[in-house]
Amino acid sequence: MAAEAAVSNAHELGRLIAEQGWVLITGGRDAGVMKAANAGAKQAKESLTIGILPDASTEVSPDVDVTIVTGIGEARNNIIVLSADAVIACGVGDPGTTSEVALAIKNRKPVILLGVEDAARQFISDIGGDDVHIAVSTMQAIQLVSNCLKVNREGE
Amino acid sequence: MAAEAAVSNAHELGRLIAEQGWVLITGGRDAGVMKAANAGAKQAKESLTIGILPDASTEVSPDVDVTIVTGIGEARNNIIVLSADAVIACGVGDPGTTSEVALAIKNRKPVILLGVEDAARQFISDIGGDDVHIAVSTMQAIQLVSNCLKVNREGE
Amino acid sequence: MAAEAAVSNAHELGRLIAEQGWVLITGGRDAGVMKAANAGAKQAKESLTIGILPDASTEVSPDVDVTIVTGIGEARNNIIVLSADAVIACGVGDPGTTSEVALAIKNRKPVILLGVEDAARQFISDIGGDDVHIAVSTMQAIQLVSNCLKVNREGE
Amino acid sequence: MAAEAAVSNAHELGRLIAEQGWVLITGGRDAGVMKAANAGAKQAKESLTIGILPDASTEVSPDVDVTIVTGIGEARNNIIVLSADAVIACGVGDPGTTSEVALAIKNRKPVILLGVEDAARQFISDIGGDDVHIAVSTMQAIQLVSNCLKVNREGE
Image (cartoon, rainbow over all chains, first blue to last red; front, side):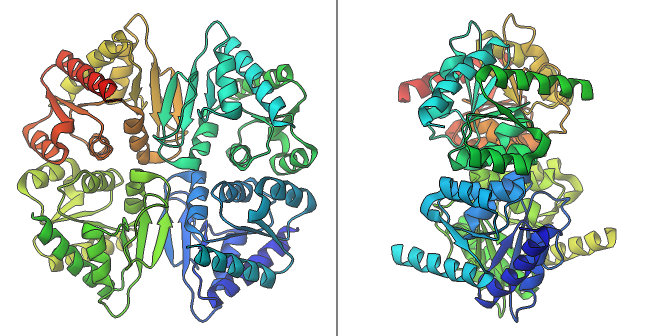
């Protein structure tokens, strides 16, 4: 997926997540899909956005409400996925997102892939099995998360 | 690649790495490619094997000389790649190895893929560019690491 | 200080912090001063409480709004202090709080000690210098934090 | 204790630790007690020194054999203590060492204090109880570690 489409999807997802009353967790940086998702959340009537930063020198998206300064660099991706009920990846074209998706699978968190190209989709589905879901729209991504949360609650 | 071939390659790589006088760093667990690589290293005349463990309850391969108990779970994969001069992946069929490879690329460490299937190879090469190298044998993997180390030293 | 007094101070501090419009960050566990501070915050009209947990199996205080699951065990104390603008310690009688205070000083965060015994106060003041402040009441602790935040803002 | 005495003790401890056939683990930096302990170890006939570094930009003591680059900053103190069988503190006059000692106690590792002033000794003994031992010489520190290791082995 073109980076542009990923950013536009992230913006829409941010808004939809906030409208569901869910907390938005991102890597918090003032760039790309993170920035877009946080900006999208702030278009909803109410929202809570958490940015889990690599370290104290990170430039933070202005739409992050609470910053968690981990000081553990890229390893903070593991904290993002451990803290999330489900992980939505808007494109997996870069190593940061790939590590997040792989760590989410390792920790048995549901992963929703949106706008992911063929090779990536095949590869990630191979390693993730039933925990990986494919969405063709932002609305479907939200629906898939919603289903995962229901299953989680029933399993408790 | 079949898991069996990955384990056999890992065993051979362990020995070759030790014979080069290099330190072998793995995730230290008493299973799969980690166990095999440490066992291989111990077949060389001299070797030093370091196991970077997720936590204190990890079962450690008996061929690990020094254990580093990180207490940070899967995030320890980031410590493995940061501590390494180069990363060799024997197969990328599971999320743990995938996260390691992705974190290695993110940290600009050279990555050598050995015995990796088509979809994975295409995907990882796409996100890693020039930092990703493909080996068709254990000897070639060692040669590729050797080249990367030379380039590093000249760059210093 | 008796553990009882520490818990009672933590409860009051939680409420005062929330009334200032500040975000309350704690270690999130359902015990001792953490539990008390979160419960106190929920007595204010509005509050936001963040619990930075050691791992996924931690029992969480019911008054924590957002849990960050770090998966890094006791090392999460470093994330607590890095994420805070100032650190208030209600008693320093246990190693967990002591490590937090020491890490706060190491990271040059202002530390306010409330109800801390003589030996601890002398020792911590010795290693922390000007970054360590002594409060004799919860109100004074809030006032000291407020001063630190002002200095921070002017320094920006 | 004067910083000078701490450095001199650290140098001697490094040598004694290596002579016991133990692995020396330090924070790896090219300064103070860390540097001295590593230099001391290299005066023994054989030695293995591991440096557990905060991040990739750390200046490393030249006498460190293997560097573990954690990328987690000061939180790496928790990895040092988790990886050690026992912790010797040469003076506790700075927040870094204090956090290490507090984390060691939290993780129930034996702590040996050498050349620690009255206020610090009282405070640390209060929070650590039976896990804290006081040494008046480097030889006694080694003897105390040796005792702790025996108890550990018998407890297994």
